[in-house]
Length: 279
Ligand code: NAP
Image (cartoon, rainbow, N blue to C red; front, side):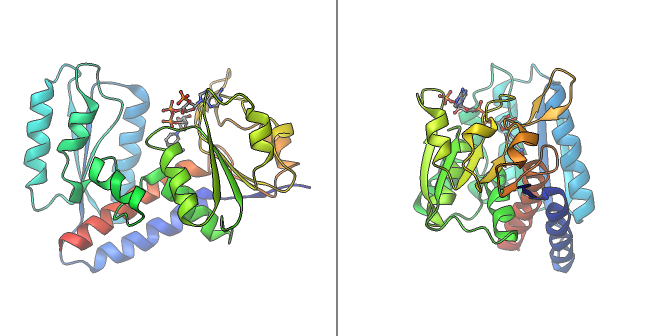
């Protein structure tokens, strides 16, 4: 058996085209602010990609690059200003932040109406309650990918590996909301292989190359690899042993070209949603 590839790159291009069409119909161009504090090289790449995505979608991008020693209060003041700006629909502060800046304070300062990452407590609460306005981009991208290939979590056993606030936990909630039976595993789960073997849909979001080997995949399972790791050769790879997993899974996401592009596309979608709500 050779798995069908869940092509996130192609689907993301379609989502972005749809966003661009919708954005062009609005009376005012949607606007997204992206704030980078410091020089984290990975964050710099992510921010560059976001600027490019905005340009592709006809979204105005306001790009702030602040020095690593920016005082917390100065960042909070900038966020408060942006909350009040009419031409800014979405605000995103690239994580991780330098150690002296308290992430929670930053995330709670962004107006929930402009919180296109959906990391504000209010928006997290709405996700838990099942009536979210914005969905966090990565889990939302996974759901969009599953929908595009007519894969429904309903009645399926879904196993999520990883329990972070930005990926694992909301991923579990979204699968639950679509009537999956969800297990969330983490670093203290003693029997990871046994848990994974129960999965009809297996989502790995850990960040450890080679964690998910083919013998942990139930034959015919759908495998979604969220992770973005660098292997010894410096190449991007996920948690899943992709080549071997293709022989066991029915559907599988590649890394790169799977969840990553979908995450980027969903940020554009959220910015459009914010702009529509505010216009
Ligand atoms: P994170 O905050 O570091 O969380 C990692 C999770 O994995 C934690 O819950 C941790 O458990 C769990 N874990 C660690 N070792 C484990 C093990 N041996 N067995 C089972 N679980 C284990 O990471 P994150 O922000 O969620 O990101 C996860 C991965 O996704 C990273 O590779 C990241 O680069 C990638 N990512 C990709 C995208 C995308 O667009 N494709 C977006 C975001 C993140 P504990 O809670 O017990 O520590």
